[in-house]
Amino acid sequence: MSDFDRLMAYARETEALKQVAGRLGWDQETMMPRGAAPQRAEEMAALDKVLHARRTAPELAALLEGAEASDDTGAAQIRQIRREHERAVKVPGELSAEITRVTSLAQGSWAQARREDDFAAFAPTLARVLELRREEAAALAGQGGSYDALLDDYEPGETGAGLNALFTQMRPRLVALRAAVLESGKRLPRLSGDFPEAAQLALSEECARAFGYDFSHGRIDKAVHPFSSGSGLDSRITTRTDPEDPFSCLYSTIHEVGHSCYEQNVSRDYLLTPIGGGVSMGVHESQSRLYENQIGRSRAFTGWLFGRCRERFGDIGIRRAEDFYAAANAVRPGYIRTEADEVQYNLHIMLRFDLERALIAGDLEVAGLEAAWNERFEADFGLKVDRASNGVLQDVHWAVGLFGYFPTYTLGNVYAGCLFEGLRRDHPGWEEALAAGDAAGPTEWLREGLQRHGALRGPRETIEHATGAEISAEPLLAYLEAKFGALYGL
Image (tube, rainbow, N blue to C red; front, side, top):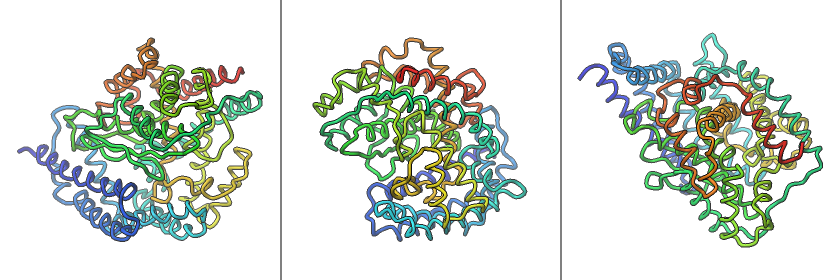
């Protein structure tokens, strides 16, 4: 075997162990008995120590030194392995394991605090998570910025300053569009009726199949906060239900299907290798947001979904497909990011981005976070936060240490705007089959142009390769202005 072959054999074992760690996390959020949390935290910390030792091993460094790639795929594999190795050697193994242990425990603490609307009870746990992530960021950053060091985990190559510039560019048009919509005086229809959980879950499975989700390599379960987990031959998703709003379940499912289909559709040639999954969370979010919004909330798909909802639920308070399309896209003030319409969603992200940068920089501490959140939310959305589960406790991300993740949602929306422009250019009849519940046209375009390549290219190169154009926020903003301008008669 060559050094490259030995390097890849080593990397495949590491990737297999990473999948095991991911499965432990999936089980924790779906099926694990609540009382098992302390033991699970120790199990995950122990596995993290094994992974950290593999990522930092002298054997790996020697293999990287001697390995030579014979093609672009091999070069991409080496790039990914070297990147992970160089990051890992900067972080002490005990610190890495402690982060894993504490964030595992924090997930359950957050869920309980959210149920009880008690941020004060959760604050000490969050403060410990923040302390550990600051320590990790300092170890990774060297002379660079701490926030950028964490951001690089989710979106390699991006910086806080660069994202701030992008968001500053986008914000005025988003605020103006929201103001125009809310001041239009037009009120779009709402669903009403009886929406049993079993019927919601059955219809969510239909939606997953319509978007090409392969149930022989995946499954749908319930979780407090929907997520996807795994890759390759085992990629799972979760959803949630609301007895008054089936859209919460259906579009949560479609969103997570976007993530999971990306993982399922990566070339099998890359299975259990460093390029055998999504290249970044921004690119991942481009898939989930595109599936959920441009495709899933399109007039064509909602026309099909309207018929399926009436069959599943009976009277839903709406009698025309056009009114159902409007209801699926209505812009209304609200607290919850995951249920926000396309116009306001990115404003939710910008709030979180600014707050988490302040937390990592030390300009804001956990003791002042809830007040800072509530003040900023009222300023941005004109609503006083009524309880913690509608405010600072609504998302799990900070509880499990994902500082630097939030901005990838808006970056993913920008990428999705670029991809949707490319899709409409290459497939002008993309809506025809979609009206019958068949999303194969757009999803096959995404599979061939983007998903099957995994992490062969960097994040921006992945999008530009798929679209044939430079990345810009303009396609997203133009799409939003056209769509909601028509809905609200602007």
